[in-house]
Length: 151
Image (tube, rainbow, N blue to C red):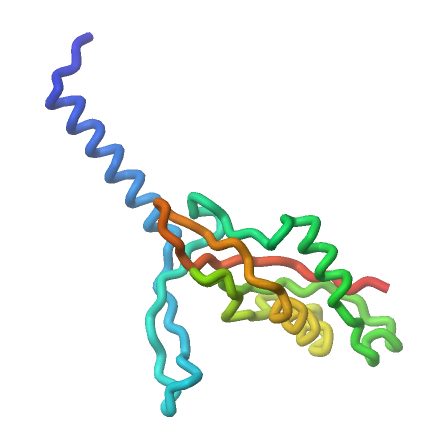
């Protein structure tokens, strides 16, 4: 079966459009508050999902280093420790184009506010990550990680 050049060109153009549309589905426009603005006005920012970027952001040294960092930095809140409260906090944050973390949020709490605050504190202390990339351009990428509190 012979395929003409025109048919092949149309097929390739269609596939390219599909690939571009597929990557655009995992990109969101996020309105973020500008803390320096007197009226706390927002601005729009493009944020990609972790799974949809070409190069994923990474903690310096990889996953094992991140786990070590969390374990060394995490401090069990006093009241939670003495009341034998355990839990897991699911946190979301954005790795910016400069590698710094921002927009740190608890998306599924542990049921104890002190554990949730501690998880956010640990993430805020993380060093800059290697940045995520799409088509050789640095992009903002949302990441989600769990932080466990076990006695």
